[in-house]
Length: 261
View 1 (cartoon, rainbow, N blue to C red):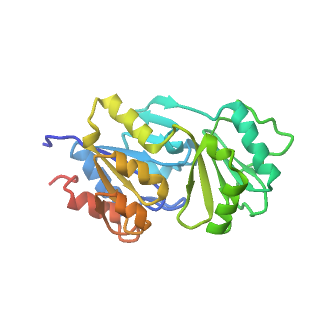
View 2: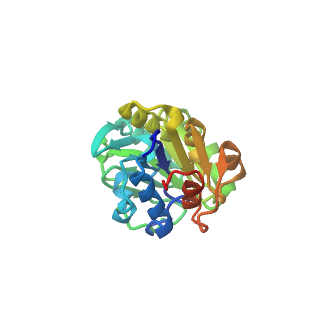
View 3: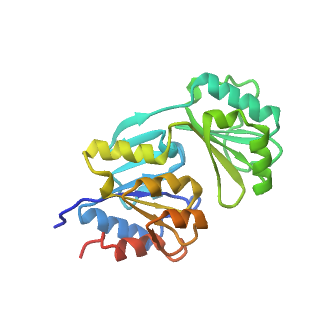
């Protein structure tokens, strides 16, 4: 019997899984043990719903924060969902095209490519210039793909107007920069989950490895950074676990005592 339910929020890429691979067996088993012990587990990801492949759900989760907070589903019930407004989306696509940047529009039901100077190899439909850019696309966020960190700096310098409307998150490798609408964050999604359960922020635990996890790690009652995370992310955490290759999430869950007896 547990005396205190913990609400565990797991980033996906670089934390519990990579690309389209399944969650490592030890990590999946540890998450399952946490739920069996009475804790609640949630995916907390920048991926939109259509990019969550079935294998990710195999350990069992009590809910999902998707689109970096744009969509929140708890116990099978959608409690929040926000898309980019049509006028902002149209302006964004116009800006991406005018600079020949390579954009990926991430929607709830579909992801679209906006081809530019960096090749996009993903197997998603191309948003042609004849396709109407409307709210019906259900876009939650977008990324611009880059060659390196210097390229990211050039993108941000060329698109200062976008920084007025979006929070900006370069990834660890310098291969893309993520744009999420102002006011939409992983931590805002966590707050909505906790409100649903009438739970305390102090009972939340967040796991992450990237700059876009900084807010979640700081907001949570206890933040766990992966050993492979950048120094700034590790400094923001209460605990630094092993790397992804070392099954760091499982190590943390076991050592922190969330897996039960």
